[in-house]
Image 1 (tube, rainbow, N blue to C red):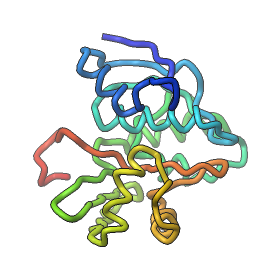
Image 2: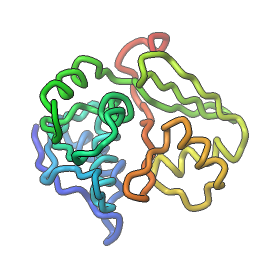
Image 3: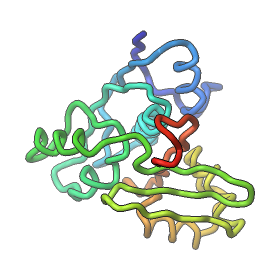
Image 4: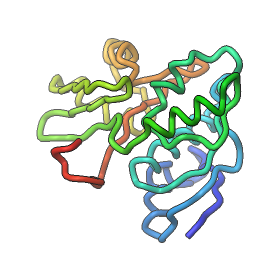
Length: 195
């Protein structure tokens, strides 16, 4: 089943992005497309909600047709590493776009940058740079921050926690707006020992 999507707003009683993705999936939708390109060169909150939709859909297994606009002066690591855990877009701006998309497609797999919760800790597994980095967040201020960041909320998260997560490129900043990169994987595509 296919669905065309207007990204839900954060206001007006619309469901949160994660809820929206899960409702679509439960309703039988397996493919959707975003109406407008995601612009990260000068993003509006709508662009980060759209990117969040792609993030949650990637974790859920919902295929999204989307377009990414990063601007001429974007850091090459943005598409080569930082967003490589998301489904690749169908179009990308800038020089060498076709080659960059082909590389993204070749490297993409589910579970490339994810988090999961255990009793009293949060574990993040990040393979975006090709090697496994595993973070065990046991300090309460970190473990409690992750569910908030999953909802793209930085209010109530300590400044030092945000700075540490930015340093590891788990929390990305676009146009002064923060965006949580890892997705919560709620169903395993293969035996859990592989991930």
